[in-house]
Length: 223
Length: 223
Image (cartoon, rainbow over all chains, first blue to last red):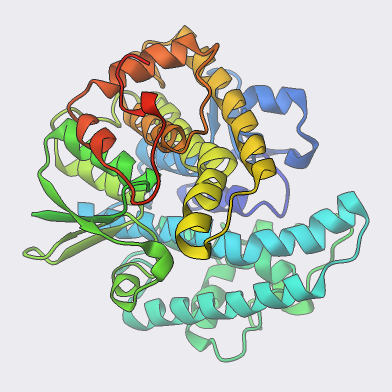
């Protein structure tokens, strides 16, 4: 069986967990705090990042959330998440990179730094200027998602794909950390409400990161 | 025909150009300075990043270097660069992410910022502390590449792959900017010397970015 090394607020691990859930692949969780840079963990992934997936019986270790996602989608045929024409697949991957890099860099990463790392590791208060900037950029990102959902049934087009999972993973962590103001984003809100009710997403939403409490609306399907 | 929007020192555009060269796909270059954030360019790619590939006749626009690479490898069968077993493909993609994210973040990005952007845009001298730190981290990265090349014929295993192209792209930009000290990295040096003589790489090495001159050894196959 797969063991997924992760921590509750890792957006890239959430993306992989949503994929495993949608595809019905069983796995167990192993808690890893990548900021501790444990030797055993660096042995598995020299990049020192979560998620890492390991199947000890088959002696397979996979690292990097994109490499893991492509592997799972290639080897488990149920509910393909990177499918369609080459051009559609390129659009899925463009949006995965958008959320993994742009949304993460603008929003999730600064929120995690200010609201999680500073509290857990540095024992410092967050910088409110950085938080305000991240929330402002989150608002711009949700405008773009509103635009996409206005023109398409799902993030990349007519079917649910890895792009939706990447978006939900980043948005859910930002929402947990109080970084999302949903006012005026009805399209994204409707898409996200539908996502929240999926069996692949429910277990993630019920988990908590120690010390940090999410806002009340975080877990609610109606919010 | 494909038009590739890029600038000479963009490592992600270099990765795509090496792939197009290895596969024999014709294309023409369109110069784009992403830091100008031109409206027309943002229309093609809201992320505002190079590379972007466009085929006007077929009305196809592709953005993000990973999405472009996967598209090209899926649609052009010559010299597959993401091939083999699912596990081998995962290793290729793990290393592509390693060079695109870790090497870029540690080495190429600070070098580009200090030696290109500060000079071209801000008209400021580079910060020698940042340069030293980038060169120190480059040394650690080359140690890892030495280790890989010691155990494998190519970066990801027995055949040349996207991992080699991603590595060569990042290393070549760092080398152009004087960030690589080759002393003590014989394995990586031998692999890179072989790479430099490939027809896919020659045209890139002969190009110059305005104002910035590379070190003498940059273009030489024997260095």
